[in-house]
Every structure is written in structure tokens, then in C-alpha cells.
Length: 348
Ligand code: NGS
Image 1 (tube, rainbow, N blue to C red):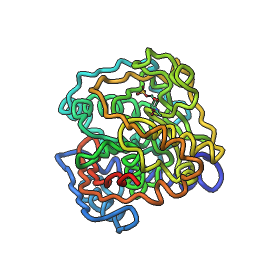
Image 2 (cartoon, rainbow, N blue to C red; image 1 turned 135 degrees about the horizontal axis):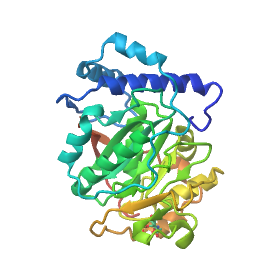
Image 3 (cartoon, rainbow, N blue to C red; image 1 turned 180 degrees about the horizontal axis):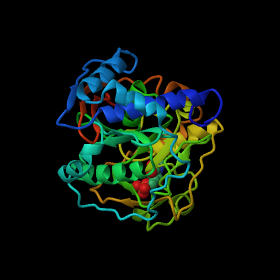
């Protein structure tokens, strides 16, 4: 939907932006951490959650109606954000506590924010698949809040954690994060973002457009050689941006990649089947620092599974995922969603 910022979509965007701005302002932090558990609900069971969330946020906030109304008279944010720094320092040593201390006052509970002095042009949900990476949470949140705020975006950060001991399924978590964020949105744009990828230049604008965008072009773990040209041109891993429309067309991410590798290539195939070419910013701007981490368990069947994706995607993705949200906790700088995403099918 945000691929086109003109025509009939615009008033809705403006309304969405205003609403989220108000929500973000409403959620001034003052030890107001919300806990919302929804055991047993799956993607298909739509509850009046939006209302619940908004009510919780309203109860949490301290903004008067008059103050909310005032937001209607703000000018739109400029097309080029005025406060960009260009190249950024990346701090890998920030603890979560420090990040909270530094940033929480300006950020709404659950990790939402909107510029206080203009109506943002874009709303974006940052969806982060997660397990066993606690030390990376502080650096990621510290960096991303600063980065996104300088871009004057209206954003919310969702960290989606896989419960249980099955192999990590990044793509399922991305589907869960997307569906859950959608229920609180919709947002103009969805970023699927690994927690160890920190953008090094704030001119790398997180905006969606007609085409899906691959973000993580040049990363430190590949010595900043643009990995798509170095490794393969179809690289879509690390971080990318898509709209609701893109996701509907490709039926989201595949659910059947358990363990490291292949799920991003599968998405590339889906996009090709749908004639959605991917675009990228130049490698000198689309640079990422990769935070080091331990080894991951590789999916030995990934090439086999990938080969079989010859148009299977309408039957494998958002339309078929089953999951249970175990808890949704609104932390000062992010929303934590813990999900039971099921188990792999036994081999046939
Ligand atoms: C490919 C993987 C992708 C992965 C990419 C870069 O080989 O899932 O490497 O990984 N595809 C397959 O294994 C089929 S990286 O070095 O950045 O961790 O994203």
C-alpha cells in the first residue's frame, strides 16, 4: 500500500501517521509497562485486539485530548530529514539498561515513536526474529531508535522470539511478526531485520516503494564487499523492506525452513514469480556492521527445499502458518512477542 504515496492512499496515510503520532506521544514512559498475554490465539483468530491495545495505550498515556488534537495542525515532515548525520558510529557495547536510560523518555511503551513536530511521511514496523541473542538487544535498540528517529519515521519495534527447542525458523518468525504488527497497524512499510545488522549510514532511508528493497547490501562480515555481487545477485538476507501489498502477493515467507539458510532465497523466488524486482541503495550507503555471534545450526535440506519452490508459495506462507502467541510484553523500547511456531513435519 505505501508503494504509492499518491491518490486515495494518501489521506489514509496521513490519518495513520497522525494517529500513530498521537499514540506515540500518548505513551510517554513513566514505568508504564504493559503485559498482554494471548495464549491460544492463532493468526486466523482475529480478536478485538486493536481496541484492547489502543485502550491499554490510552490508559498508559498522559496526553490530553486537546494535546492530541494539536497534532492535527503539524506540518508534514520534510522529504529529506534535516538531522541526518551520514556515516554513523556503531556502539556494540551498549547494555539494554543504558539504552533504556538514554532513550525511554522519548519513546512510547512498546518501542513506538513519531516525530513530535511534524507529521511523518512513513510508518514502519521493524520486525526482528529472535532467540538466544540477549547481548545484542541493547546495541540493536540503542542504534535503531537513534537511526529511525533521525529519519523522522513513525515506527514500532517488534522482537519476535521463538519458544521451545526446535531449530530456529527465521521465516516463520517473520510471518508471525508481520501478522501481529499488521493487527496493530497497518503500517506503510515492514522491515524484516536481523538483530545483528546495524546500519552504518543514516542516509540509508527506511522507506518503502513500488518494489521490495534489499537493505543489507554491504556488511562487515563480508568485508563490505557488496554481498549480492560477491556471493550471488539474488541475495535477500539480513534486512529488507516490503509493503503489505508485496507480502500479500507472495503470501509472506515460507514456513518450512528450519535451521540456518535458504529462507531468504525462497523469498527472492517468490518475488520473481510475482514479477517484483528487488532494488537496493548503493553499497557505500547501504552498509551494515554485523555483530558477531556463535555458530548457527544449518538447515541441511535447504537446497532441496529451495529447488522444490517452483510456484508452491500460494500454499506455504501467511495463508497456512499456525502459531500461538504466548505473550506480548510492551517493554520501554520494544514489544516482545513470544510465539510457539510449531514443529517441522516428520519426513515423508
Ligand atoms: C546463502 C544462504 C542464505 C544466506 C546467505 C548469506 O548461502 O540463506 O548465504 O549468509 N542460502 C543458502 O544457504 C541456500 S551470511 O553469510 O550473510 O550469513 O542469507
